[in-house]
Length: 246
Image (cartoon, rainbow, N blue to C red; front, side, top):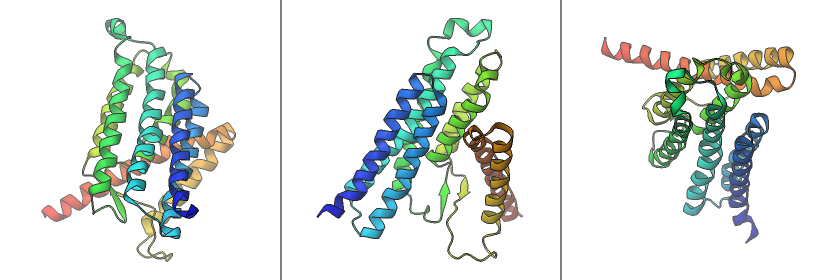
């Protein structure tokens, strides 16, 4: 039957989008690289939806989805960071390591694969996430590089911060940090206050970015939105941990 191949075909479109994004990343075109990551995210959303609607979920589809996601949300953003680290200013003490340090970016691709493997086996992530989702990590780095890359390339202090950021991302990807998802059991306000407030706040950031930078602001807005999302989750986790310890 043709319908059983539809979800896997959409997943392959996700994978192809990730390959194209990686090409643009190696070329140094961060705008198109992030655009293709976003296109891949759209395919990633619809492959699972189509599988459920058509009732054709399969083990091979699950494995293919993880492979495609690691290319689009692991390899592609890692390549973007690699390309940026290759052209940034380095402190004089680290200039001799310019040919080595950029490869640190690909550690993030490995941790993205580990995050996806854990997600496939973790039964706790039905209505939320444990650890930073790979699409969120990819969108954060792509958006950050588009928004502040010119400053990165002229400041020698930025390179160490990027490297530290890579390791922070790797930790967040595989951490036990609970993170809320925009999944609604119902559309009422009660019980969804956090989700609705986050959506409204994100919309404000998005509109402000468009007003300030035109439509490229859409791409630049992902970084602050995801950073705020992560901080909210960390604060909530700390608050809940303190409540349980009392």
